Image (cartoon, helix red, strand yellow):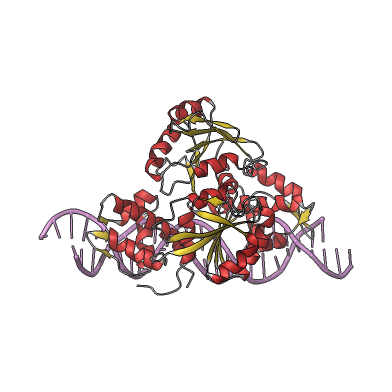
Length: 206
Length: 206
DNA sequence: TAGATTGTTAATCGATTAACAATC
DNA sequence: TAGATTGTTAATCGATTAACAATC
């Protein structure tokens, strides 16, 4: 086992491994191998073994990995063996879709509160949530010690809201606004921008 | 200028450069430098210069890059100097949000058709689109020579629909279903799964 | 001109792959 | 046991950074 600092690129693959393992588990499969996992995910078996071995010896020669055990280990490593409260800021179509999305269950997250600054929307119900005023964002985030936010506001206000979130103690932002955010080094950001993702593929088309 | 095969990791950064440049352009800024761009995006100036120089000498010593010119070059390189027709398969909340999203305009994409297999939804209007029957998916995609699809169906049916799309000639899939897809080597896939993106950040939280 | 910034080289750093002994 | 598959090493491959001559 290697106990050094783990490269972020490896951390980035672990959730994909976990997702594949949970799908195997749902099918009742109890054992898998780096080769099988690699075929499902589309990466090499050697890489999977190398990645996993950064954290311990979780497999058995000859038989491979126990699916439930490896799930347990990955959930622990990724700290999703608990439930993180998440806020959504921006109740447009995307925020709306996220608030009603049931894909967070069993993956370590729960939507805690949702915000918008549109007086028309404040007080309305979206899924099981009442839309709160963005003016109360910082207060509520601090009060509830929330660490994770999904940002679904227009690009023009994304940085300003991000600043507020950071000041309120948020440490991880999933940014759906099509703009880069400037945050301190101890805050993580992940970007989801469909147009950017699509533009990454058109290069390869004729 | 280097005319060798360009690494995918560089291609992946170009849309981010393009987005930042377009934001500068909207502010009326006509010139920028690798340093300024790097500060906006959060990567090193050296990397930006190196990436851009793969495609030609687009800057000027002493003054930097012309914003409109670099935008033009990147749009050309990424093949988003045209408009790609895109289909959406799956008219749940996410498909719905994408169908009404106006962020594709000026970025090289236009939603062409939207599909669902739910008889309740077929024929309904979502934004400006009438929901078509997924049974007609292959036919319509072939007929219109569409190359790009956004997949917003449940994980359980994603692979099956992806197979249909590939057989119908789709070459790029933006997959919102929380599952890995198996596609031939000449088909590109990008993954958007909020839970996976969030799990990539929790590792770093306390 | 003087200052600024590119494009590029070489050095460094990091990631992936292939191979195989260990062992279940 | 024989077959399968891990964990790990060493080699290869690729990406990033630092530095600077060229030049606008």
